[in-house]
Length: 439
Image 1: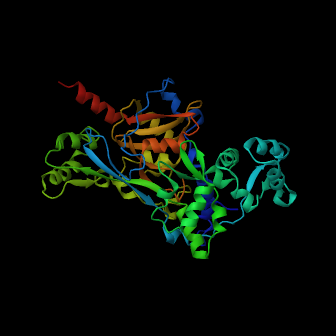
Image 2: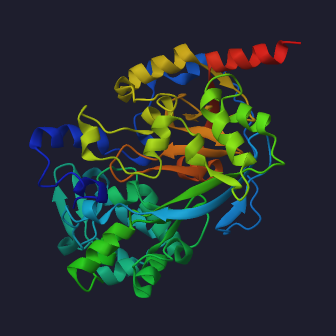
Image 3: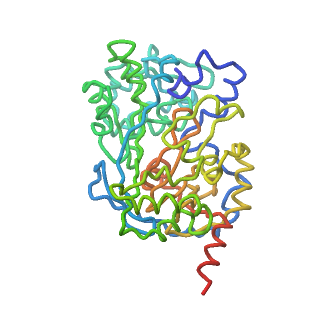
């Protein structure tokens, strides 16, 4: 049964050679996309002791859709949560997944599954039903379980979390390995404004479980059993691509400290000052205009990509852009495609960046590192007040978005075995230090 992401690459318009390289490079779990790892890991230039972690941005209400950031050298920002979904023109090109749910385990674990399911909280009768030969298919090194719909829906969230956590270890379980994640709000709020019927939203809530501090949902096939038409099935499929992002406006008026704001958003150095100063000062001086969309003060490439989804044309180099490509290209007017290669991306970090401690500044790159190996399994760019620019996954269904750092941590550090490490471009760090040391 193809996953949500696998379906993206079955389109009629994609040639087979291109399809092969796209699939090979794209179908990775979100937490493992394009690791910078092994002998070239980032621990080579870290002390190994770990640096202090930043405190999350304060929000008055956890579910507030609009909030102000803390004031700082970046100025004052007003943030609003909005939701993106993959465009219908993209979804309509691809076949829907099967409505039959499937759990895949190594065949070698078949005899241990009864004890595992019992420990997870399934009743003896339900274990017997799920392992009944008519609900079981052996295929090479794997065994596929096809739990009946009614029994699947009756599993408690706690039991579902245990079973799906185990299933997530095997990439064959696409939806458990890479679930829909609802972060910082409720299922109802997440799908408010969507085209889903209330009954479908209730079903999502019923079938959800907890993964770390996030609400996770993996039973997309179950939902398709309740679609009343092909068009509704595609609406459900589309809604499962939903992503929350932040729209941000920099508040500017005659009381704003123009020099401080310009200095912060130009990396604290002379870099980019000529691009920002005229715009910031004109907004401050203009009556009736008191804010500026943050996209206007981002570098050119980030401004172009923000809130968009990658197109298939971006796979012309054989692999789709990922988080590291996004972070390391943040400074560039045109993307440097060699950064698609993890080895060369690592080389750039080692040669051009230096580790830094919080508080992070504009354009610092934050790497999410494995505590044991030093592998970087995610990266994003710090903007201000622990708000970051990120792409969460090397695939066509992951847009470029702005998020709170604490929410990104809930996606990638839910296992508790990683940490965030900041890096700053060496030329920016050197110019900052020189400015601080000058009389």
